[in-house]
Amino acid sequence: MKIFFQSVAFKLWFIIKNGPKIPKKIVGGVEIGKSEDEFDEENTNNMGQDSRAKYMLYRAVNPETFKRISKFKTAKEMWDEIHRSNIVLCYC
Image (cartoon, rainbow, N blue to C red):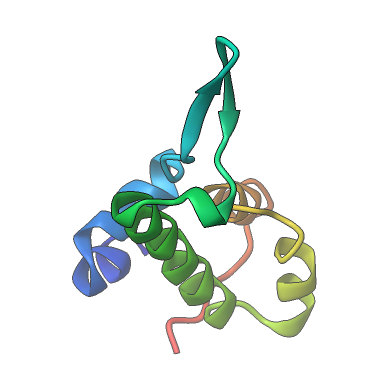
């Protein structure tokens, strides 16, 4: 699966393996997540890559597994569940 993701876009594998860089900001000395309206171009590109990786994972699983992994927010969380559960992927 690693080679499949790298062949599409090399950065996708890093996002699946490590998770996306969640956009954050400092408010009152506390780090919090940015809203989508506050994303700059880098934030948008990074989160877009995570969405692309999630889409590719969705396409590689059967409907039952789709229901199981669609509750996760990031491609990394989805991948961890697939790996942990020994789910078979289809490279269709």
